[in-house]
Length: 316
Image 1 (cartoon, one colour):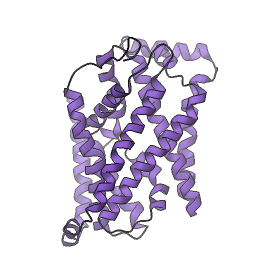
Image 2 (cartoon, rainbow, N blue to C red):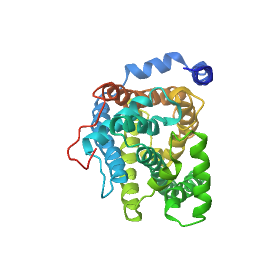
Image 3 (cartoon, rainbow, N blue to C red):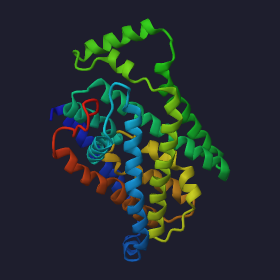
């Protein structure tokens, strides 16, 4: 690890530790520890039951975006790649493991630009979908400020997805792509990356719908984490603030989102009447069940067989 990366890493760790210390300084430690003695473990069953379909939906969405008439990916391999991304998310900021996994996919398959472009589009589709989900429930609940924030994030996301299909200043785009390719010494062909980022218009509604269902399952898991601590949090409110929680996880200056996620949850859920101790206990449970455990499982796929299992000559 070079000095620049080391410095960035230590800054992220320092910021995360500083935020956690500030949060715990405000805690009533007795009340906080009491939360874990009174957990409703029956709700943990629902969290685990929701975990598997949410992972399958995310992997199937990536497969839909990746598949082309001349090339596709087996569902099992898409799941493997997703699990690798979850493993990377344990140590990388801003949930960037969801994109960094494309490098592993390239090493396993030999497909470079397509892997990277689909991983980028997949990330943007996910953000657009959670904004649609949040906007609907925000407006339904009368939380106009949250709904408008979700819409403000959704618009640039959908424009980004549709941009490669819009024929505007093609020569200028090619010129910029050529310059970027030369800057990285041809390690990435940005012209090919741009071409590979095109998504068929007809599948966009389907991948967004899949994402909405997937996010619904994910934030139901957060709801059951609150139920474990007897917080009695309104699930409609949780869905309303889902876009803000999701985007906060993209904050790049903390270690794997530690600290920034919890801070945003404290701000949002204290407004809904929950105590600091309950919120942090629920946030820790959510991180354990939804981020840490799947990420640890993903380590098996990251350090396991270093290639895809091909089902056909056309698939990877």
